[in-house]
Length: 72
Image (cartoon, rainbow, N blue to C red; front, side, top):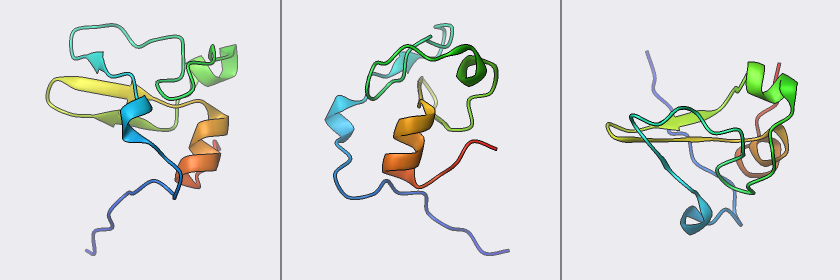
């Protein structure tokens, strides 16, 4: 199986990401633009970045703009 690296598009600034702690509940806001997630986005967040002690969630707009992904 071939692995692919997931990398953001040009213009993405890692310093803008607000990371949640591993014991925090998922935020109701996009970790990048801080826009409030609508009900559909909260029910199905397609892009979550997770580490051993932190996580970030992205709204549909940021997911599309910076990661080239569409919510199914």
